[in-house]
View 1: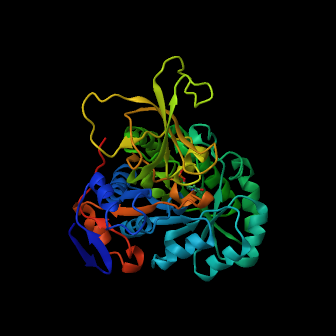
View 2 (view 1 turned 90 degrees about the horizontal axis):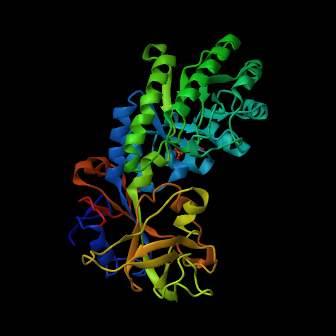
View 3 (view 1 turned 90 degrees about the vertical axis):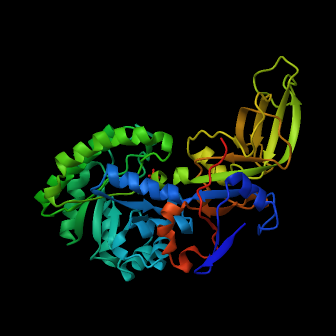
Length: 439
Ligand SMILES: *Cc1c(COP(=O)(O)O)cnc(C)c1O
């Protein structure tokens, strides 16, 4: 494989993922050859950014870093000019370390540790959210010049797959009370934010929240504030199969923005997408480390509910599971489908199969039932759309390592990473030709 060095970054020239898996199992890889690994296509993030600017040109995205804090993701987004939604001192520090201006950060955690507010104040990260009275008194003593954003509960968060429920956001009817306290404390409140909940497929949830935010703008004016910021939060779906849903969502969101916050209102519009930017960019490849064969009608074996014949049920054990990158199966209601990293003969037989993680916990199952051709230990399975809330929340429970990530980018998007500083991408492999997995 050809390679060259750019700013101390080793750049490999094009290989498709199956070849990557083969290469990885050869001498080129750092780690054990059968270890699970991620492939991230950074061009996918560039394409999502292009889609965003075409659909919501007035709304500046502030990427929610908690969703996936891979250094290349952050570097590419910083280069594209997004802002960042940070929730802790560490997240803020990582963005500032990339030389991103502090005014491109919103500290969007309504309940903050004191020392973190001190850190934000010291580094001029002044935009931050709140949703309660006690937070206002706290901010007054530590960072009285902060630019505060009041977070309201959306009118209806049941239209998202995972509502944030009662944890955050004040009732819009209580906003007046909070804003009067802020005024008495001589604090600077600049606008409103909300979050409709994760994976929202219904634009009317956004539109209703925009209308509700507008009513809070009016209350603020009565209290004596002149708001000029609306933050429409996150919740945008992240798979390319969701593209039509995203467009439909914007068909409802955009008219609401234009009606309540038209261009000439002078209100700056921002959002905090997380999943949207990263979900489809990452694929994880796992290795089959062990295999058991059960008769499908064996009552003491694994039951797939299809008993009664003598066909086998294959149990495959792979080296990443729900304590690792697949923790999203527990926290996020997502559906995953295994892909093979090899081309199949036409008409090959498939069998009832299940896929299990590597730990000793019986709960550690990735897929309870699927149809697969018979596979052998040492073969690979891949899962797409694994970029959101996966590796960032993985643990090394039972001593199982987290997969390493290999980065790829198409030549057409190379300009974005070519200008990144080595500190942002050093020690990362970049593939110049887009790599597509075999479906
Ligand atoms: C998690 C979070 C986001 C991102 O949500 P997605 O559903 O991934 O878009 C945005 N804003 C806040 C305040 C969050 O907590």
